[in-house]
Image (cartoon, rainbow, N blue to C red; front, side, top):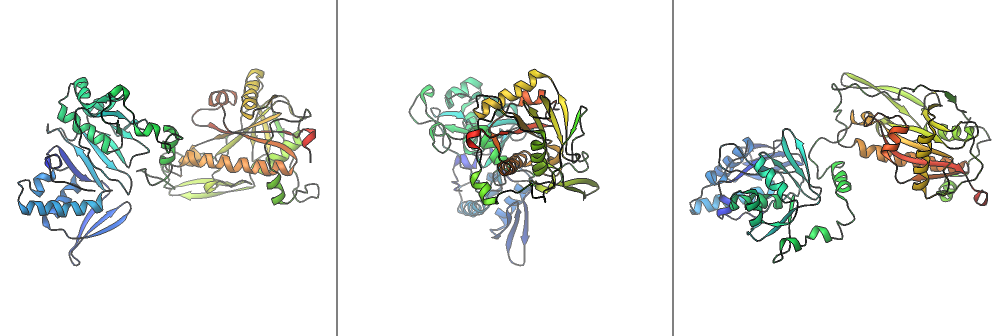
Length: 492
């Protein structure tokens, strides 16, 4: 971070503070400042009483440093700014930059660092600079204020008053700073500073110089590193991992004391019940090939034999991949919750996934949609509506690239409360990981059983919610897998 003591930097409109979780202490014995941050402790040689006073004030809230460090051009003041520049270079990931309009109402907006390498450098803008909100920026409500976030940014922008929100929303299309000021009818110097803050925080982008606004090109639109990413995918990535996300993440029990833990299994729905075969995995009849052979022979099938699989084959597949082998109770604070052990792994033993089977043709099972009970190892017929069943199977046929409907479709749903009760920030991303490990387990067992498996890349939320009788978003569809018998020309 480089700070130049010019008029713009020393402007009383600029306010500085430290993140709320930053603690500044003085080690008198060693003559050091001890600064506790999210990323660990920082020890700095004491830069003197003036800069120390500035940090104390910044710890209390937004302050104008020009009033503290001096602004008369004296050599002593220049030395204070130089020492302060060195300190902020070490604390750049802890400094909140706010913009005031000196009305006594508080800051208009604040750029809050959320990453270790958060640099904040205001661009020198003119009225002819072309600006646009970034295509990766999202707006949401947060604690009664508007929050702007971008997965590309190492800051998040908190908009405290509607004027700044008005300016931010007005640049949904390219326009010059001059035209923006006229459009929102706000003095250009203030609009210029608001835009500079948005650009410095990574919420807005500048177009190439010397080009009319309607012809301006923006680097993010042609960057080969960004073109593969959608806004939703990149935001999901940054919000489900630490590094560019400020907020609780991991096993911090956010639901404890707020909601009761979700049960280990879903309540069995009403309907005709089909108890499945429980194969004895120790008998010679289950003589699987070696694991390496199964892995090497694993493949996806997009066409299936005319002969349907049997209910015993589906029962064995479910028994070997998804049944509950055992369960136990754990304690979190004053709450008790149950975890289970199943053939496929799950973080914390929470196993939030539910399985539903949509049957087109299966020897021993009527056409319809079933819920799988992993405790009783049984299927419950929950939907016999032919239109909805066919809609599920047709969606699977299209996703699999098949000519005919698959004999059986396994739909995986997630009861997110099972995960979010224990984990902050990673519940949905963890559920998707579990979909992957369950699909891999299904692939390996189906291959060992000489069945024809295929994982699907996409499913229809609306169709599944209706056909599976889900209570959305308490339970949401997250994965699909089809099963049949191998065509004659591929049977081993």
